[in-house]
Amino acid sequence: MADTQPGAEGARRDMIVIGASAGGLEPLRRILADLPSDFPAAVLVVMHLGATSYLAEVLQQVTALPVRQAESGETIVPGRVYVAVPGLHLLVHEGHLLLRRGPRENLARPAVDALFRSAAATYGARVIGVILSGALNDGSAGARAIKQCGGLAIVQHPADAAYPEMPLNAMRHADIDHAVPAAGMGALLTRLVREPAGPTPPIPFNIRLEAAIAAQEAAGMAVDDQLGTLARFTCPECHGALWEMDDGSLLRYRCHVGHAFTAETMLAAQATQAEELMWSLMRAHQERAALVRRLAEREQAQSRPDLAQRYLARARDHDEDAKVLQELLRASATVEEESGSGAGGS
Image 1 (cartoon, helix red, strand yellow):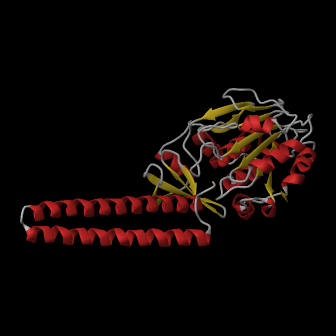
Image 2: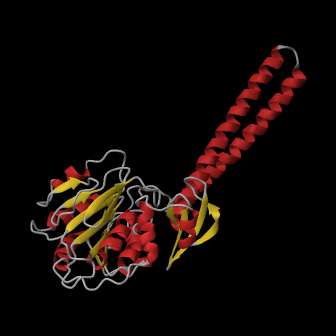
Image 3: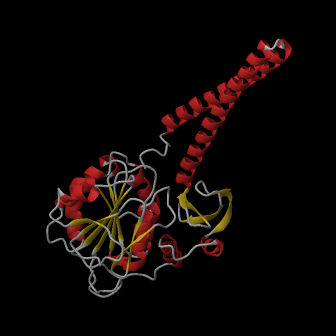
């Protein structure tokens, strides 16, 4: 990156951070295809990934800009595209990339919020954050952080997104500057990066602190006490205590080891946990029913019919319990289908 400091006179918007999830590949390909070969800003991409990713190779096929998987410690160069790798947060600090196995945010690592927040804390008004198609709301807190630090926030127009939840939630919780279809995003970014960035306000303490948590430079209950108040809920990931953070209209939570959630992601995680528990309980009751039937068979074979009947009665009780759980699972699936509140696709 250029040596210009975040708030320096004449600084331009030379840090583009893009977040995407389900349905985000095609708009991302379109945006990069539309950027000119002399694009004067670095582009950092976080897309929710599986254990293996060929995203850099896929994107290189459509753009004249060099695309590469991010490497920790690498100097950020304008005109290049850096793609997050599976299992590690992509962060930035003083002109370099950082890859860190910090705590997951919104059940994801790499997470959009972590990248956006670290870019905002480091580059202030020079940052443009872009949120593309995806489920739930990773990126909303990051977009708020970018705006608080003087940068610009852009979303793919929800009507243009295969999964509009991420853009819609960002629009709900952050002061979005532009909402455009993917076909117009490349031209918009090309114009914005050639404009002066404007002044960077003082970076809020909480944004710096949360960026440090993602970089594994800060953690613990004393840190969380600085971010919010102790909540009555437990972390869906590690089952530790949670602190509630009031981030404008966005309600968020962090645990003392650093896992972070929006309230909506918490609900999705709790729903998944409840479903897993019900499946486990149903299996346990079915297995207990089968076991006591086996005992009943043995008692019947040994001419003890009274004891066999008692075992069979217990088996019927376990069958009924399993049936109740099966009905609960069916009802839960129906509610999720009707509300569209499942965590899939994020």
